[in-house]
Image (tube, rainbow over all chains, first blue to last red; front, side, top):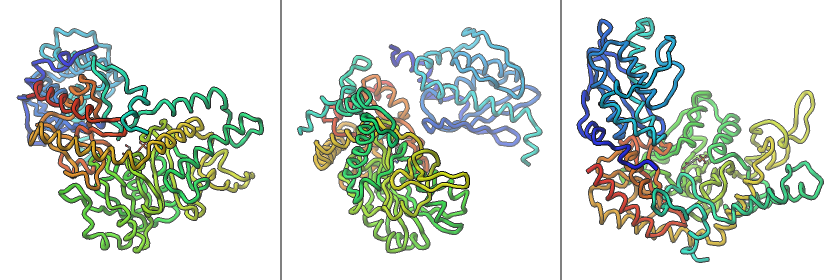
Length: 164
Length: 408
Ligand SMILES: Cc1ncc(COP(=O)(O)O)c(C=O)c1O
């Protein structure tokens, strides 16, 4: 039976207590995406500043449990400054680690199954224990799904202008 | 019957989880079942099962008898004047409220009519009215909650002006608050409105009499009162049920069907289309028998003293570190304790408590407008029932202290 130490690793508690990249970005120009976990009422807001195919800056706000907050914080550090394809790859790898297979992450791009390479995840691997607590997986993936949504928005100017 | 011996009757409570005695503090969400309920359902399947209302052979007649006996037992349990006609079996309390919205509501409510709700309703008694508001353009109003976690009735008469229905909980599943329902119902009736009671939380815990409650409709679920999942009740006054159009269409609810139409069956079957949850009804009947044998007064008294013990113990051990969203005393209050402990997220708190074998629920408890009013996303909720005792409360307190070590 998994113990709490599998879930609440020291890195996780550290990111929970002192979350990185907390706050907001002026939107526009930044994109703002909101995610909810209807099971527990957690909410996360992800601000992404995408420029020239790069995720230049990211901020996280919202409220949630230690798992959703630390996952968002770890995510923000891992994706900041990366190219969009790199960010998308990381999202896929992370979600593969959480063993959630969604047919579609982006808009229409055919996803190849991702081989899981925990080495590529760095500190994010600390969240691996979450899979032993199935109800908490949604907490860990909340910010990642929200980021994917933010990137989708940023990459489809049609939708953005259509709502103007 | 001795309330201290109740625990023995519930097989599920005697297990070890994560190396600890299971302490079940989530009965507001769903209760556990005594052996007698499990036995009644097993015995039904082992000896009697056949479809109801259709067979002339012996076991079909017996199935029918047990199904209708359960209806009468449940009806008597809530003081229904005509238990054989007025108790409609539904899937759960949620379906019962939807039934009222989709039959009585659609028949009666027109654009501009108002439905009065309260700040502390469960989504089951909110969303059906929001749906109707979208469909019909009816207006929704809200009885506000005061800072004492009780309904503020100061403006009740003004709020009632033009209202056709008041839909109000008889006990909050988040706060434990028991609103002065009879007083609200009186005022509503004087203003010409009907009254729906969401009894999901009170019927399992308090003696219930639909006449002294003063409601026109009452909705509740078996699974929160020692019965099985998959069955609930809509009770309504017979004249109302007679005047309402049917709910779902199908077998069982008709008297005659022609190519150009149908006529509905008598009460209560008019509202029960298709094969009903028969074994579940039998289990429900056994559940109210069990509750009756213990005595609802005794259960209420036990829960009052246990709630007082919990409020005192938690205040003593944790002081200002622990916040309880709900009335501070046991007056007009049930055994539902919504907790915030330091700034530990309820989800994390529930996870740590689980490691100690303590089952509490973390989340918004299907009451998002109330959570917004409270200014939180979620709480950790411990809820008490007849099979809980002081040692369960002590274990909860010990487990909370454990959480402080991890997240402190
Ligand atoms: C006050 C209240 N109303 C309605 C319901 C809905 O009950 P069910 O889910 O059994 O339909 C609940 C259950 O959580 C409740 O607490």
